[in-house]
Length: 385
Image 1 (cartoon, rainbow, N blue to C red):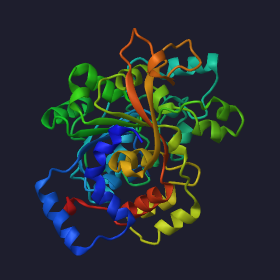
Image 2 (cartoon, one colour):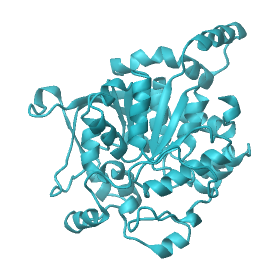
Image 3 (cartoon, rainbow, N blue to C red):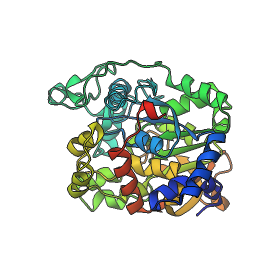
């Protein structure tokens, strides 16, 4: 495990204890008194939110973190649709005290037309996200919008209900800048979608990255090409990087910025799978979140976003990690456009200021599943915050 994670262990000891067993009463009282004098860890969660995408913020609240706000981005669908999912899922759990800020509609340079042209030359992605060809029939059947008008909303895809609440703002990058300025060195930035909003914040405020506490992303798959061609289309989907590839330029800006710490959860995000038995077990405690997860999470995908969230919230869940210097391919003519490239220090480029990042290799999957289960079965509400 890299030294950068060791500094975080003390701050997460209470979370670790809650996952492994109960503590004696005197210890709990001592910790409670200590926690009253110590500020909470703070986080902004940037994601392409969906109907079952609420688990990362439930995990953060379960860990005792202060969620400063949610940010929507364009990745799986357009930022508008993803933001409505965020508002709606907060609302069903009495968590509308957490503000939602809409992110940028478009990546820095990429568009659906450019993306689809790249596919004509270099091959299709198994999952194309918001840049898949527009399909109004598919939307009417209950799927999020793709291509076309970024402001178009598919109410049929809002299975959790259309929100009654509204955005706190439609300027996510400025919101993040304000919070990092307000709490320098204290705010973790979590990204499980495209990195567009974070790149914009970096460009708007040169001190944004260095004044944040860290950047933790879901994405950054490496050495996955063989897995894309030797298995099913679904396996190819598991090992492609739509979060990075939908905005390669924004990804490079974010992952080469001087954050004090950058952690990527790429390949490791495929480690922990979801089974019907697991979903049924969670649904034994019935509430709006367990109902939505049971009905809509499915058994096709692993705990992607949840793995990245757990790594940020409690680094003791990490079993193995490595570190290297990271670059992002921003050549549209390249078949690896939007993918990462890793370097050891002796061989890294000298004409660029690349950052050394931590790549998590493995996590304690049993602890992760227990944590997700608890956070969904016993979610916090605004009355608890």
